[in-house]
Image 1 (tube, rainbow, N blue to C red):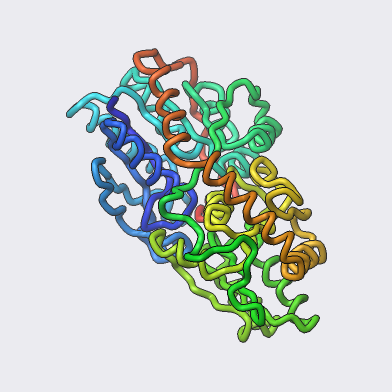
Image 2: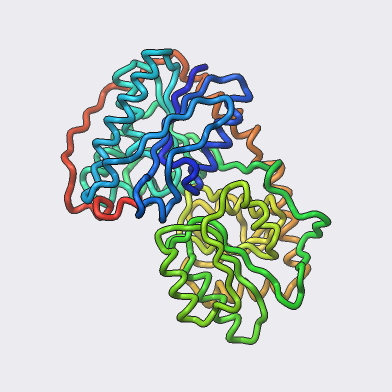
Length: 413
């Protein structure tokens, strides 16, 4: 099957979408599919600093086309311009060699681009709702509300990571749950695995345990809450070290909070970490912290589980579907700093609990969330749509809404 895959973010941008795209496309290529990926990227200083940026790298076996998101980089973000470029690029590739299907990551702008490609070419489409598109895109303004409703109502298949996330999208847009096909996140267990000699729950240096926050440095992911909890633990006389790995919109805020809380002696801010370097980050840690407010399905939590780390996270959308409090992780209410502090302290003090949670999480990551299983499920969805006609009963002509907060801060979308 020849597949056009339209990606909102791909390496060198570090994000869950980048990881998802790379692992899925590698699996599809290994199955014998012919894949062309059209990937947006930020080339400006602001976008590069938040995400990492620049043209995407080659992906063995697939054709990768990088499109700089020039419209998004305008002072008043012009996603409409970028959608036209994505559609034109896909149509040109189809003219050279026809596609059987188009699959987009993210409902907007890439999902709307995929539906426009289908309308132009008469091929079926799949859209993955993966994170901010389900949480925040739509309620922000009339333009994005109408665009998301077109995608949610007319995509050939809607893939989503878990039921709690589907229920949130239903609440935001009124989309029937029957429209969604739940395909959980996955982890490359050949890349993410425990350190040599791993014993579940073991702390490498009992005198100074190491906590790890890895991923998008964003207050919506709990980056600032992590620092506040660590400050409480240090104030109580705890000796520990925190690794903060990654970049994001709140990198400066995190650095400032470290200074405000006098945590410099306890905190290592690593900054940008390439995907190939991520396994070593996890293996340096004893406990993984992800006090996030919402997820589509957290790649970093799955990577930590596969790496053998006990996890402290939140009772949040996209988390409760893979972590169960007291069974394979500890979960607290998002934003509850005292509860987060207590959960971390509990894991630090209870070796039996650490070991039990780490072992259970590792077993589930290895057996339930491996990429060969998930990629086969997605390929089956492609096959079920192959040769079918796309839904063309839609129009979209809502003008850009100047009141949308993402027009001024597109890096948050």
